[in-house]
Amino acid sequence: MSGPSSTRTNVSVFVRLLDLFVRNMFGSMKHHAVHAILGAAAIAYDFARFGRAFSVWVDHAKEVMIPLLWALIVAVIWHSIASGIQLIELIRAETSAESIEVDGPLYGAGGQRIKNPVKPSKPPAWFRAKVWASVMVLVSLSLIVFVATLISLPTSPVPSSVAEPRIEPSYDLHVIGLPLVIAPFSAAYILRIHDNRTVDAITYPNPNSQVSYWPSKVKLFPPESVGEMRLSNHGSVSVFNATYEFIISVSSQGAEGGATNLSIRLPLIDLLVNGRPWVGYIVNQSTMAAMIHLSRDMAAQVQGEPTRRRFDLQPRDLTFFDKVPLMGISSHKWSGDRILPPFWPANKGH
Image (tube, rainbow, N blue to C red; front, side):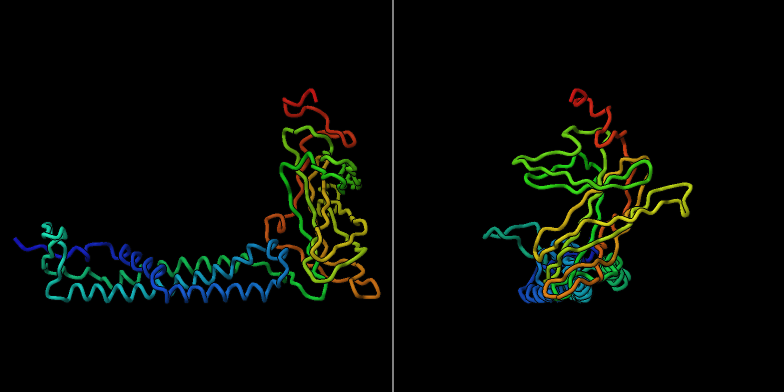
């Protein structure tokens, strides 16, 4: 019978590569220092691109994280290649030695296993090719993630904290939107789309110290969706008496292009630096779908300037509804601002 042989070379090449990769990634302080430098470079890039306005970082959290992800990808690719080189050297050393010592089945007087000399196994067939194929798997996955982040980046400039106004329009659709909750001592601006393809606006005030609800406190089933428009100031100058116009396209079989375009002009708005965004709601009370087309400019009195002027905006370009700003049909029958039954069974008597 032949003596025992080393079992290291019997372990999968890919498993050994992953073991080395993890130990290298989370190993020495030298590697931790390099990782810290990469992370610091990513954060410096974020500061250069987004400025110091905290609201910009919050609204663009996804884009802020992308440079950190790039730093991680660089580290993964570097350690993958380094681990591959290290593994090839280890396998060559293990298989070229005359004998190596491994733990045997017997224990010495001190309680530790007695080392036995064993004859090293032959190197796995095509082990170099297997190592580099495993490395390429890790590198390829990293590059796929990198390309995916590039594709997901918005093509429009990102608002930053500079002297020129930086106003960002955005639109979101809340599938379970009604009833609207109106905070105490505030008011809600609501645009209503009607079956005759018209849009009107109401301001619903809440002068009380408790929250109120529109159109009522009744919970609805099926749920009623609500569109939410925001105008956010991400710059370093305030704007006053801003006028903003956009388009709501309501589906219409008889109209050119299959839709009736309705021009909407919002009331005068003040957008202060580090202030709350302006928020308005869109409620479709009709049986026709609609699309929201945000404008890319507005007119306003800019802080520190003598006259009103127009300037470009940078609509948000991150979410699905930024790409497809749709508004679904109403799930209920309306009579003015009152939704006709049936509601959720528990609220029939409300």
